[in-house]
Length: 230
Image (cartoon, rainbow, N blue to C red; front, side):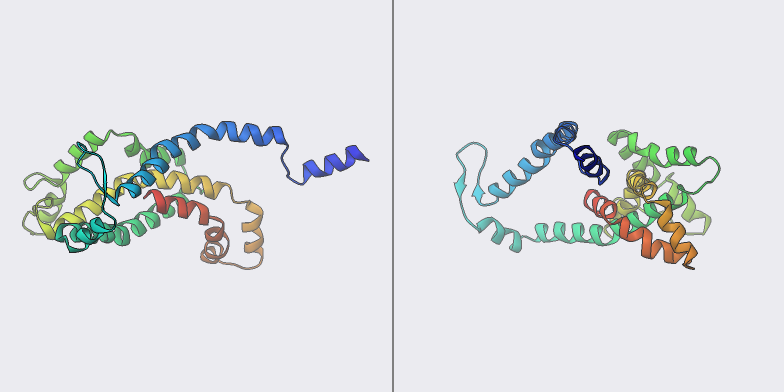
């Protein structure tokens, strides 16, 4: 009876103590890296906001003075506006494009692995090379975007030195990294049990309805993760 009870317990999906320990050991490099390179610097930066420190003398506690200076600083307000603009405009567009690509590349299409690799390839490009490529693409004389505009009789634009065009240019450049989000979405989509989609199809749900009622709720953790790292 004890063996049967133990077998039923194992079938229920519970993990043994050794499995928990093994899981944490495998996850420990990521956990340590997160604590050292993200959590600690973030908390330390939050602590420094209450101090005045010039790196030469000891930190001096100033309370909320730094926050008062930020509120009255035009440059800080402009930075906050630009960050909010990017977050509200660029991030949702990135998520929609990467999720759409993931949906398309989880279907049984020809050369699917090739397309996945093609969209992910920009991720491995060094940051310096990435910056040079985009600088050339936005060049006022021979940049790709100005060449396309010239086909429609539009004068060349100074994308990176014009206030009204710099933000759209940055948003366009951010699409370079949608491959990373696409891969995460693909991992989430392939983890959805096919039986759930088949059951929804049998019930008469359309393709859009299956995505809205079945896929999106199950993809919430992956969407949230991509939202954070975007």
